[in-house]
Length: 383
Image 1 (tube, helix red, strand yellow):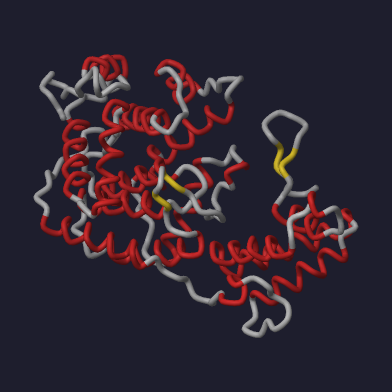
Image 2 (cartoon, helix red, strand yellow):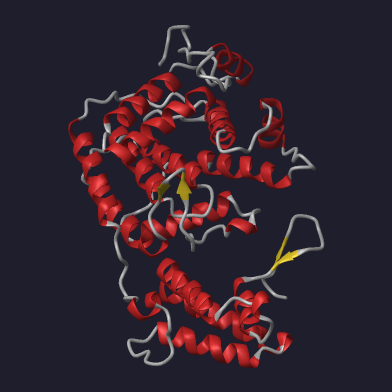
């Protein structure tokens, strides 16, 4: 059916959201259908994440499937639910507490806003290095964007050898057995390299969210299973930490982006953007990569040095994020990213054949902090 998503090169398809809703509203055994309440909850999540246009789009697309699916009765029910959610008068139609209580605004996670305020206060007085971009143009810019994409994907589980990744990015040699992973590498590279995204920070408010969604779509466009470009519909976690609830994502991001403008430009604001996106975790996947891309966009906007999180430093970086999330301590995150900005600026990116061995010598590609220490380009200890 239209907008079903093909799974790789197989003749298998992931049902579009509107098809899934219609089919689950059809009569059938209870064990093979979502309940009416579950469908309502899904529509509430869609409304919270994508507001009225998102629900209207689902309704319009579902209408196109009525005839080919023979789903007139299901569409009638779906249309009634959507109409009730978009109306201030919904007596007798909505059943769930979330549906009955939903507001037409954008709720905010106030506990997270307090945490963002703590970080913003610390960043306003932090003494941070002001490091000029060492890879602003030419081959250096290409090579830095390549390494940025390589490390950013590697720490998130998309793992290639440096040689394989170089073939993907610089010679368009897509790995036949891993086409989606290959395009993940290309997606981050393109966002880190191209002029229209490299140094452009999303504007504040609702527009901030719209731009994030577009960059997420570009980054993960070959992964329909993670709903690229659309905000999450279900809660996500890191260990025992629950990120911002789907219904509060839009409002929290909009308000957080306004708070960002109260933080000094450059490295301070870049750190704020990274934590804002990482802590809200607005998408089903790709949040870490996107948070680092927006951080670096703020740095490139002022021609300051972009930041790579090397593999060896990633566990420590996660600990610094956790210190702020769980204990309200912003200093570890601020000092660690300042240190990484200086670390990255210490390398010469003009020749890839030289910078990769230099980073190997610095233990950047190693995975065990217990066995290795990250070194600077000159061989001194970095962390």
